[in-house]
Amino acid sequence: MFDDLNELLKTWGYLALFIGTFLEGETILIVAGVLASRGTLNLHYAILSAFCGSMFGDQCVFLLARYKSSWVLKKFSKWDDKISRALRLLERNSIWLLMCFRFFYGLRNVISIAAGLSQVPKGKFAFLNGIGAFVWAMSFGYGGFYVGKKFEKYLDEAKSYEIKILIGIGIVVVIYWLYKKLRKKKPTDIPA
Image (cartoon, rainbow, N blue to C red; front, side, top):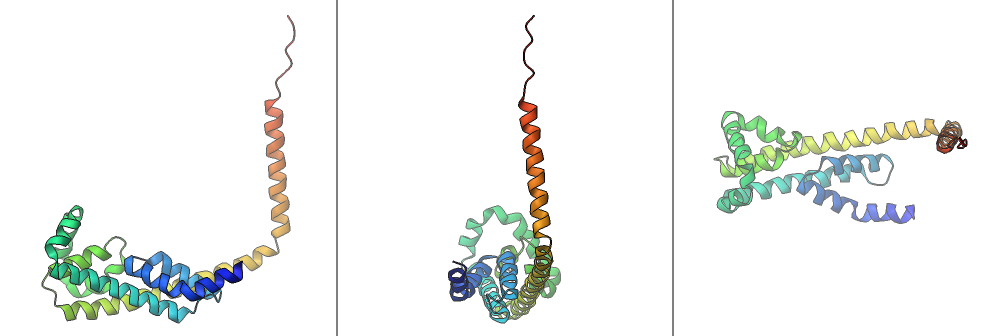
């Protein structure tokens, strides 16, 4: 069964990672990094997939906002305040914002929409988006990889305590069962 799962991940994992990072995706990239630490995925291909998915997703949102602004504003009307704030931020410091926005949860699509609605040139957005996507993919990919390596180390250490932990859990379960059993016993009624 695990061989089938590993094969499935090796075959479709990069596509799933691309789609996941196209839509949002820190979590899926961290998971891919952990899987790479276990040898299921290649870390560099995972980072490349995440970079492409993230950059392409943001470019699509940017271009959609640039060329279909009325539809985007109608579709995302609940984000009006956030988009207005993002536009003000873009006016003050567009370079840093466009490179770093994907590191702040909940800002990715808002900033891409605001950039598309603003006067930010397409080339500038693509260049800064690419730098940000690259740094983001490397950070979360390697972060997941090292978390996976550390977790694996602790699992290896935990194996030496496995029997002791199972015995401890068994004792706790038996004590809890006895407690519940004794608590349910009612004193026999004494006739008056």
